[in-house]
Image (cartoon, rainbow, N blue to C red; front, side):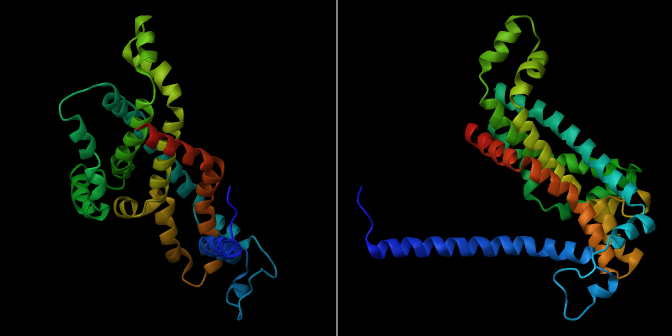
Length: 285
């Protein structure tokens, strides 16, 4: 193998250094807001407004977190988000498994056209659907009801979940379920006992995608259940300014940390799993 000359080695080294510098800048760009939010959340109000600002809290305190639980029904807001997100995930995964299996195993007219068609709603900005949905839910008396946000969340997440799972189902040999049906299993039984276990990584990816979408969504939740005890965390986070005023930045940032903590935990636990399964699904499809 031919060795690199001194000039080329210098260029390669300089390129590597530049790559590391750019990577570090991007990491700093991503982490700095979260660090400052956490930093402010554990400061007293006086230290938050201290000039010049302190990058390390002089007297760390959990008083802002205690204030959140004392002054707000945070547990209620949290459980609202948990309920809405859980129902959305379960419904989306079940429907996407059935839909993706049908697209993967059956050949019917306009199959490819329908596959493209289910992605069309993703092209339309969600903000343009707010007024029509509001009128529909108002006519159905579903405003200030969990269904008014769960149904749009499912409709929004379902197309991507279907596409993720189609890739996994296409990669599973048909002979496995055919053998089960020869032994007397129905198609649904073969799907449940043979195909679903093999497609579990794809189902996890679909569930995590749905989780991020439902947990963070603001516009629909603000419009349809924007007040009262049915608030989800994103809307409650917006309303926190009404509860505390604009000067209580310590409490506001403490609320932010509590709201994003589940997302951070999910990514720390499943980050490698998400990357591998999404790539695998794309390759198999």
